[in-house]
Length: 75
Image 1 (cartoon, rainbow, N blue to C red):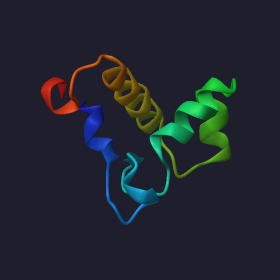
Image 2 (image 1 turned 30 degrees about the vertical axis):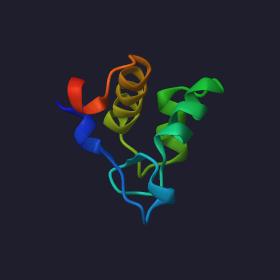
Image 3 (image 1 turned 60 degrees about the vertical axis):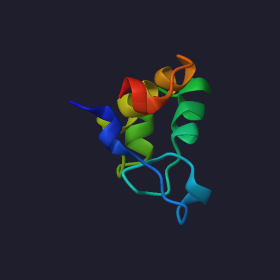
């Protein structure tokens, strides 16, 4: 699965921040929830509009950003 297909950017949504599937769920919010100690199951239970693949896509996107390479080069 190409997780990056789940990450979208649109200047009309969340000021153009990378979001999940065009929804108002910025990747940074998903990462923040995980960083605060929430499990994937807790996130999905609290936010049924999200899918497990959205969380995995957020982690993949964050990893690629930290790699220091442009996303377009590694995607």
